[in-house]
Image (cartoon, rainbow, N blue to C red; front, side):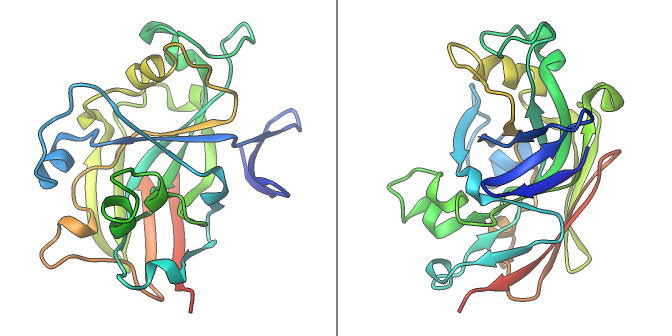
Length: 242
């Protein structure tokens, strides 16, 4: 299934010709133990939830634009993630209070995502909330296409990697998630309707830029790739807004 740009954002081009807009973006923090530890934090007991502005979603080969607000200090980071696009229950009803056992039957498909993050805004500029630092325009590249849930089957055994200018930065497997895709869907749907077109980011493994010594942040001209086994390679070039 292709992803396409619309007047109001990005949508999935469904096999029947309809467009399913990405209406909501929900992210999970620290869902890989090694990533939690590289932040100096313990493994969370419950999923760490944040949201991203749907207007931050962009496509494969779009530029990641670092806005002027993020230039000083420039601490824009990459995060390779498995993205999950929610559909409906098999009976067509909305996803709410779904069990772990039935959760994967509510998935339309999977996609590569780069959860681009402005670290200063994430930690210092927004009162401790993640949302602002992750919601700037173009800070949620997705692609290159959506692979149907039936094609993937079990999403808990997929190798995922990130590269910056060809150098591997992250290399892990979704089997290392603390909370599985099914568990996340079930937990996030408790008392909450997940509308069709909800994009759920499932967390990033260790190796992100801020945790490296010295840190590696994105700069003008950098080529960033997120590769997930059986899904493809998402590629974007960084451009600084001056």
